[in-house]
Each structure stands twice: as C-alpha cells, then as structure tokens.
Length: 213
Ligand code: AP5
Image (cartoon, rainbow, N blue to C red):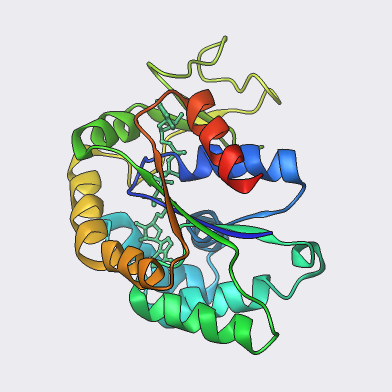
C-alpha cells in the first residue's frame, strides 16, 4: 500500500501516519522529520534547509525529491509506505509520479485531512513531541500523564522551533498557495479522497481505515 497523507500544518498527518504505520506495518516517511534530523546533525542538506524551515517556507524541490527518491528504495518500503508532508508542490508530485513509474509502481491512495485554519493554529501552538520516539502531544487534546514526559517511552517532550503563531500563519499561507494545487493534480487523476480532520483523533483514524480497507 502506497499512501499520501495531505493536509495543512497541524491537520494530523503525523498523528495518523504513525497509527497507520503501526496498524498496517508500513513505514511513515515524513520529509519534515527527515529534514529536522538533517538540521540537527548539521549535514549539507540540513544547512541548506534550516533557514527555510525556521521561517515556515518550503525547502527547495530538488532537496526533498532527492531525499524521498533515496528513501523509497530502502528495503522497508518494499511492502508500501506512507508519505507525510510530501509532495508539497505540483513539481514534487510530478517528480514522484516519474520516480514510481520508472519502477512500475503507483500511489494507491491520496487522502486529504481537512481542517479550518484557526483550529490548526490552536493545535500547533499547543503541540509537543517526544524527542525519543516521536509521539505527539497537545496541551488540550492529548496531555501526557506526567508533564514534559512521554507516556510511551519516558522520553523528554520538546517543542519545534517553527511552532510559534507567526511561523504557523506563514506555513498556512504557503500551504494554500503552493500545496493546495497538489490536490488538484491528484483530483484530476481521480485518486483523491477526503477525511474530516476536525473530528476527534480516533474518529479520523477510523475514517482513514475505512478508506484503506
Ligand atoms: P512538516 O514537519 O511536514 O510540518 P507540517 O506540514 O507543517 O505539519 P505538522 O507536522 O506541523 O502537522 P501534522 O499535520 O503532522 O499534525 P500533527 O499530527 O503533528 O514540515 C515542516 C517544515 O519542513 C515545512 O514548513 C518546510 O519548511 C519543510 N518541509 C517538509 N516537507 C517539505 C517538502 N515536501 N517540501 C518542501 N519543504 C518541506 O498534529 C498537530 C497537533 O494537533 C498535535 O499536537 C496533535 O496531538 C494534535 N491533533 C492531531 N489531530 C487532532 C485531532 N483530530 N483533534 C485534536 N487535536 C489533534
């Protein structure tokens, strides 16, 4: 199963991708996570991506296409994968179609998780993530039982550098301008489905599983 999860910043792509990965046994490929790891490690890619990420702009297409092209050739992607945060421009979507076609593959599902902009701002400004296992938390919607500590693995919870209101509003603008056209690209191919991301996390997950079967 090869799946793309679309949606604005904070729509729940990461939350749902982790749950789908667990249930279906396929990896979550998050370009955001991969880029943050590169920034932290100070690699060449990380150095190039840092400024764009901190301001909420997009990293260049050649960088993210290169990352995904390498990643989907790894062994754990043989049975499928979940793309979380990629493609984010029509150019990236075209590059993905091309790289899969070369290997006689195609995307099975493109699902857009929809939510209102103001809800997304609220979700992102209350978010924290486990520095060890990546589990996501929220000050209102999903609290950890012990403040600042992950329920799953005991790791320390951290806040992302781009999770402040000003940057989130910029990320939303970028989403509407540059990423929303990707929905049109897949819509024309008849591959696009929609799930209401305003519902509670479990309900969103059930709706996704109904589509995936
Ligand atoms: P990325 O890491 O992909 O960030 P994003 O798209 O802004 O998405 P988020 O991770 O912020 O949100 P999410 O949808 O995963 O929501 P989550 O599940 O965490 O990208 C970061 C940056 O990297 C970009 O700005 C760009 O610079 C660069 N980049 C990445 N990919 C790129 C690409 N392809 N091309 C170019 N540049 C790229 O949920 C959010 C919060 O809400 C959590 O606290 C969660 O607990 C809560 N929540 C989730 N669902 C619900 C619900 N149903 N109800 C209530 N709360 C909920």
